Amino acid sequence: MSALTTRTGPPTLTGGWRAHRVLERNLMVSKRSWVLVLSGFFEPVFYLFSIGVGVGAMVGDVQVGARTVSYAAFVAPALLSSSAMNGAVFESTLNIFFKLKWGKVYDAMLSTPLRPADVAAGEIGWSLLRGGLYAIGFMVVMALFGLAESWWTLMAIPAALLIGFAFASVGMAATTFMRSWQDFDLINVVTLPLFLFSATFYPLDVYPPAIQTVTRISPLYHGVELVRAFTLGMFDWSLAGHAAVLLGMGLIGLRVASGRLERLLLA
Amino acid sequence: MIEDLVEAEGLVKRFGDFTAVDSIDFTVGRGEAFGFLGPNGAGKSSTMKMIGTVSPATSGTLRVLGMDPASQGRQIRSRLGVVPQDNSLDMELTVEENLMIYGRYFDLSRREVRARIADLLEFAQLTDRRTSKVEPLSGGMKRRLTIARGLINRPELILLDEPTTGLDPQARHVLWDRLYRLKREGATLIITTHYMDEAEQLCDRLVIMDNGRIVGEGSPRELIDRHTSGEVLELRLEEPVGALSGIGDHTEELADRVLVASRDAESALAEVHARGINPAMSLIRRATLEDVFLTLTGRTLVD
Image (cartoon, rainbow over all chains, first blue to last red; front, side, top):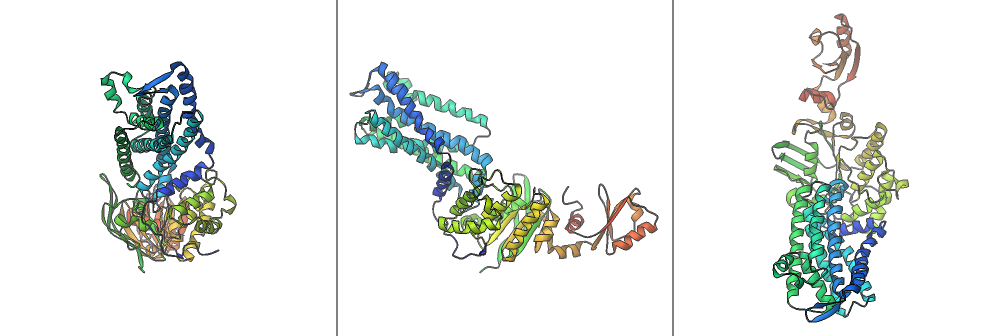
C-alpha cells in the first residue's frame, strides 16, 4: 500500500468553473433513481392527451394571428413551456432546500476547490439537463401527433431550456431565503396562476386590454409566446424581447443565488 | 518549500456581537501534529473553518500553505484534507461513490481516483463496505470514511475537527491508530478536541483555548511540567477543604471531589491521614492536560 498523503505530482490546477462537477454528482445519484427522473417526461404528455386531444376535440380550431390551427397545436407549446417551468421550479426549490438544510452536500463541496457560484450554476445546469431531455421527449410525441410542422419546431427545445434557466435561477435564489417547508406553499401561489393565465390555454386577445397588460408581466407568458412561435412557425421581432426577458431573469437569479449561497455557507 | 504551513497573527472571528476567536497567534510547522484543546465554544471550530478557507477572518492575518485564504482559497483548498465535525458525507451515494465524486471535485481523473480508492478503503478498513450506502454505517465507520475522503487529493495539511467526538471507546482507539499511521507517514495534522487524552495521544504540540483566547501553548509534556506539580491526589471529604491547608502545592475544590496538586502525592496522602482526616475516597495519579486546563482557567474541560 502506497503512502496516502505524499504528493506525487504538482498540485491540482485551480482555474475556471467547476459547475460540471456538481452536474456529475447529480448524475451519479440519479443513476439509481432514473424511474423518478423519467417521470418528469409524462407530465406534459398527459396534459397533451387530456387537454390538447380531449378538450381539443370539443373546441375545434383556434385563430392565431392570420392562421387557423388545431387546438392541440395551439396548446402543445404552452404545455411544454409550463412543464419546463414546473420542472425547474421543483428541482431548484424543494431539492435545493433539502440539500442546503440537511444534506450537507454543499458543505462538503465547498471544502474542495468548488465555489458557491459553481454549486449554483451546477444545480441550475442539472435542472436544465433534465428539462432538455423532457423537451426532446415531448417533441417526439408532438411529431407523432402530427403537431411538428417544420424543422423550426426543434427550436422549441432551446426555448424551453431558456424558460428552465429563468425559473431554476429565480427558484434557487428564492429558496436561499426560505426558512421552513411552510414557505414552499408560496411557490404554488405563484406558479399556479402563471400556469393558468399565461396565454396557456387560450390566446391573449380573448381578454380586455387591461388584463392583457397584466399577463405580459408573467415570465411564463414570454416563454409560451417564444415556444409557440417556433412550433407554429410564426416569427417576428417580439421574439427577441421574449427571449431577453427570460435570459435577464435567469442571469439575475443566478447572481443572487450565488451570492446568497456564499453568505449562507461561508459564514 | 515553506516550513510553517499555517501562520496566524492577531486572528479574530466575530459573529455580530459575539467574538468566537479573540486575537490568537500560532504557527503550525510541516510534519507536526498540532492540536487545539478546549471546551465546546472555545473557538476551535471557528479557527478550523478559517484555516479551511470556508469562513473569512474578521481581522488579523492568516497564511495557509503560504497563501492568503481571502484571495487564494481555491488554491489552498486544493491542497487541504478536511474532516469536518459532522462528516457531511453524501447520503445519496455509496461508500465508493463518495470517494469518487470527492476526488472529481479536485479534478482528478476517474482512473486516478479509482487507484487511490483501493488504498484509502484499506486504510479506512472499509474495503468490504465498498458498495454499501453511507446511512447504515456505524459512527466509527462514517468517521473513517470521512478521513479517507479527506485524503483523496493527497493533502499537505489535514484538518480534523473533533475526530472522535461521539464515538465509543473502541471506535476511538481504531481511529487513533489510523491517525498515528498518518503521523508516521509524516503528514501534517491539525486536530481540535475537547478530550485531553486525545490531545495527549496525538499532538506533538498544542494550544489550549478558552473563550476564544489561547491560554497555554507547548507539547503535552511541557504544559504538564509548566502548569502542574506533576502528581495529583484526588479526595472525597466530609471535612471542609480548609482542613487540608498546607498540604501539597495547591488545592482545587470541584463539585464532587478535591484535587491536591503535589510533587509527591504519596506523602501528601500520608499527611492527610496523619491529621486524622479519613477521606471517603482517595486516588493518586499523574497530572494530565485536564489539570493544566484547570490551573489555567479554573474550570474543568468536559462538564
